[in-house]
Length: 108
Image 1: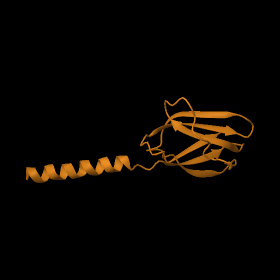
Image 2: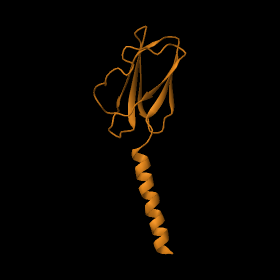
Image 3: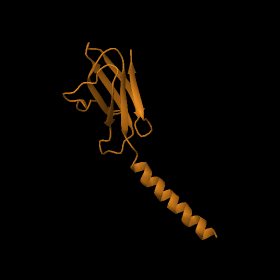
Image 4: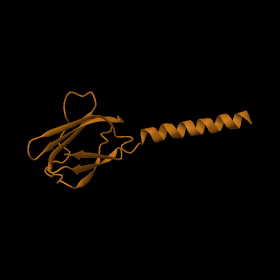
């Protein structure tokens, strides 16, 4: 009986390790502000520079949402977000856990 319990414990442990490394890092970004987001960045928390603009040539219009895959292959979960709005305002949100976060909203 103890061998069976130990075997089951190892199976569950192995499954949880696999699931942890395969966490979904897609986050729906909601622009609930009155201004279009013209640039959006997500970089590992603690990094001194921003990665490339995830929106590229696109924008995220006011009142709209977009699903963004934050997974950069590092397996890292904590990211800082930077949104640049059409009026030049910049909003930063730090220490976002994209392994647990399903959506994130920018508001006025």
